[in-house]
Length: 155
Image (cartoon, rainbow, N blue to C red; front, side, top):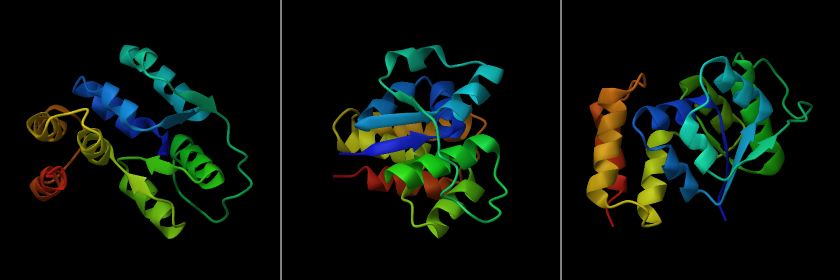
């Protein structure tokens, strides 16, 4: 069973390419209240209402040290730590912090790979979505990361 906690990045970037529904590839999606409030400060993706997710609060007593992350990333990291969940983030500093804390972390590309592995996407659709993340969103992704994601989608 895959339980994942999302910060705003994957929610925004997958929505930008009309693919927020690939988040249904996880068995349990947790969205911290702080992350939801960050989304509301802009626009909550309407397609989010089509997903099953749980709004959660974080204890905020587990993590120590100076994380230098925004509140949403910090809370998402805390929830991932508290619940032994995977952290979904596209933010490099949050990924690094998760790795330092031995928390499994994946970004938007990893969610697409999971959706392919769980047969929710064809290989060509997964590759198309990964390339769209690079060309149609505010997310910076190198060609090598796209190729690695496409290769990961191979059976």
